[in-house]
Length: 506
Image (cartoon, rainbow, N blue to C red):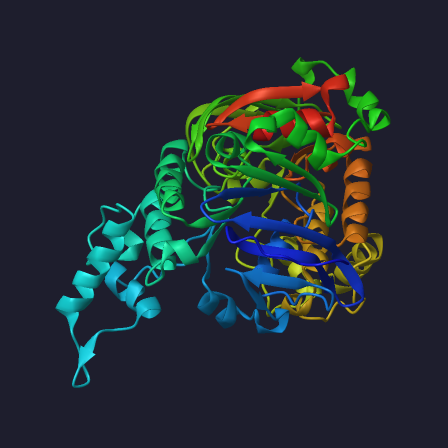
């Protein structure tokens, strides 16, 4: 493999990094380095290996036996990179969801990481407040140490998380990982956070930034690494960075696959025959959306986190109220105030949160499937059992025993149970919010095959996905949400992975 030298200016050097889940290798011997006082972007489509790599650096995932690591010029045994070991070494991380406890003050939250100052067994609250104020001031964060974390805005939570993560460590000896830290932030809040990070970079801090926001990469990063399918496929310096080059590296040469056969049936249906029409829709996270879904059409919806895609589906599903605009199904205008209103109109929403907004963990698979139809079945238990068995067979739900508790199923099988529930109700419009997130490829293909069957039978499908390649393969049209608006619509020859990625991330 050759010598593994460490230039004095390198903060981190990783050689031949492999990560495996069981017998399956998911990161395939990648090598990279991060210099002192540099920001390096780590990019790739979902499933490319970004999160797996970050988890390896922070001690969550074990590195392979061939992997070698140096940090600040010193060899590090991969086995010592536990969650505690990586933090002690000087590797810190800020996640997308700031892990702050709502009923604790900022000072109390900081003390969980820095320790409580005390004398004679008594906590020195004044000293704690002073230390916290200094910690916040180091990153120019204007937040009261006595404020409760639950009272902070999303932007303030991100800034506080940044300050806490770096507390008690010299930036000139540290590596900060921003793991989609700006994904849920507005453009303004993201700039506030990244400006502060960049100031610390000027003081010697090294940063690895995982993001889908390519304009942030262009503005803040010195180097860009692109992963695809567990391989490092591109490394671009700032002067050679371009959004087109990054997107092409992310999706490869297969982005032109278009499922034309799946689109032909609905393409000829006129807009006036739409099953669902939304006009001037506004609500939580949505500033303006107007679109239609034809019978038998699969309409994809996507966008970066916080741009309105998921929020739009929650409004259509009745989980969030619309503050303005209208929704009609088959020509009848609706008042969607609750999920029950949507269900009554034939709109069935499948949440990405399978446990909190989906199934009941302690109930059986059978009871979860028939839950909305208890009154319909009444005492017809044999009919209910037969319908459940047919759905379990159709969707390959495992295990086959309908008495199995829902909470004990894998994520993919939980999702199939919830889909089975709605299929029995024969929807007019099926609203699916990232239904294949976290499910295995086989389950994903089963679910998409079922969606095509439904579309062929005339059901309208509204599908949000974070996977551009899935949208290109399975949808008839795709709308991309930007800033709460349906800013871009793609169809026909435009409906490729590359164009969807460009409209979403560029």
